[in-house]
Amino acid sequence: MRITYGPWGETLDELADAARRAERAGAEVLWVPELHRSATVPVAALAQATETARVGTGIALAFTRSPMVQALEALDLDELSRGRFILGLGTGVQRLNEDWHNARFGKPVAHLRETVRNLRAFWDLARNGVPIDLPGEHEPMRIRGYQRPFHQQRDTIPVYLAAMGPAMTRLAGEIADGWISHELHSARYLSEAVLPELEKGLARGGRSRGRIDVVASVLCAIDDDPARAKRWAAGTVGFYASVRTYADFWAFHGLAEEQQAVVAAFRGGLSADDLADAAPDHMVDAVTASGTADDVRAKILSFAGIADSVKLSPPAHSLDASVTRRCQDRIIDLIATL
Image (tube, rainbow, N blue to C red; front, side, top):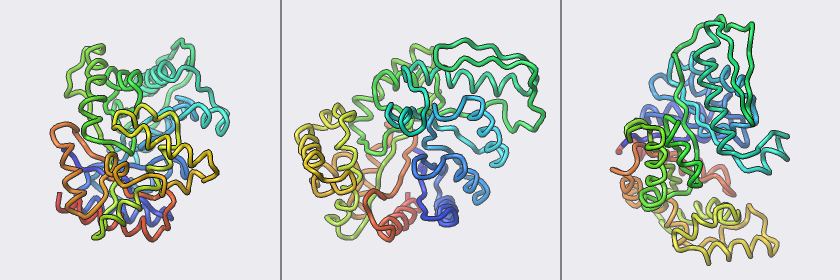
């Protein structure tokens, strides 16, 4: 099981320093998300700050850039990292796409399928000037009279897809090089809810299980006082519990009532940044790795034999930067022992 890491930093310099330290500790992939920063520019910073670890977007929004821009940025990042880049894509939710980015959302599974198709076609054909004519409901692509004249590090670039729902998970199994979980996760959920859908997708694509890297994200809060560590992770748990989209996820873990209590607190006037107190410790325990270093190590190792990789990250939601920094240091120390 590969140990990978999502570094954190208030500045790009701090982010790069955390990536270097995680690489030295043994992290095999370094991931950056897209929300408060773009995904691609921080990956460029990490690519130049590191030497051996792969660098990836975990994840970039799939519909807010055209597939051609996404393909070009991926080629540039792959060249910059000397073949270490992974393009992780996710759809985001409809409101984020349409209201924040004025982007088309449509039917997200079909939309993402066409996006990945276009990326791979561009990487394959544009360097040789071969015309591209791909019909589509969401992302038609028609390119003529174009040839990319620059160095291409690899023939193709790995594409990982983030998915929670069964249909998107099946799509990942069918077409993707990797699947990335939500940052709240559990080994039981992966084994019982996710892997069966991935297997259906793999069968539909005529592919073996070894064709896809299953990446389980693990939010880690480490402190010698386990109760304090759980409260650090509770802000992220409370935030996502307030989102109705994740109702099936909480119900799977027997936490439907707890989620409803968080939703009620949110509707009662608490902001999404102030829901930590509404998320009890047992809710945090179910979907994060929070506690002492030994507690967190045991939770990470519970994914062995189920996931191919784990993506560790520190909590940041509703926390002072000094706390996130403290958690990050402890996680990097733990990576060195894993």
